[in-house]
Length: 459
Image (cartoon, helix red, strand yellow):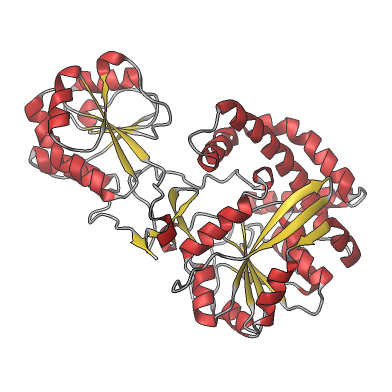
């Protein structure tokens, strides 16, 4: 087995400082009640300006969840509440791992607990799935504190800090809670569930290449297949769980059943729908600091995932949220024709693709005659719609590239010959000479175009 890389001396010093700082803060928070800590944390949300890089992420996540009809004022107000609840939940979480069983029970109000009881009664173990929500350190303690007869465990991500990780693991293991690292074999948690254990999994994060592509609030993302995988191998029922702040230092923990219709087998698409249901219980208590639908800067067309997109049959009539892409096309009709194979391939590459073409008015008719589904934007209008995630230049005309730069401030991908100055311009390099049609297709492939296209599967 390959030896673990030894950390650099500076990193070891950093870890010791972090460990010492955590012990000091943990000691301080132990002097306050949960209610006082929550209020202090809520007031500390005024320090959110220190995390300015997270503001756009929170707003974009909320914009997706609320839908296209949400007003910017509503999103801004909700974002402030998210920061308020996040700091309050974080500060109370530092105390959550030190509470006695009676204090844990006093801080949690269980709701719809009969859903969990019915699942336990099946005698096959239970898989609990939750979003990053509320005081999730306290959530890990809840079942063990109130029902010590239950066999409870959770999947966790080990911390990089070798001094802090054992301490956090010890805190999370209070009240007979077992912990399984997400980086080890899944045989141990599967065996645990088969032995009638209750396994908790926080499942609302991007899973990358190992995940399953599903719609989450209408947008495609790669989600962990682990809950569905363990269910398949154990037959254990899946139960959703949400955590909502009902007053300072008190949270409602609600249990939810997945909606599985006759003839359906539980899948990651069902898990995504269940997590949506749990999340909607309290949007302000969700940890929205993760960019759930983040683009891969090197391959922005790509959705990483091993399987999918999977959708439920009841979602058949529901449109996916569009994935809009701005393309600067040639203004010369013959040159525009050379881009059509690439444009058609991109449009077919994923089911949520929405093509926005930018060109001079003289090429509008040519684009319409191509019968390619698109939205046309005229350069002469000097305006583009907001929230276009990135742009691509499919022309050798340096003037056309410059015009795009005047209208659009987001990331722009182009061949080196049309690159403009600015941090938002990114070159696409090709290794061989190709015919124009093949060259533009190769540019799209370099940017992660799915070839062959992603095909939706309805369950």
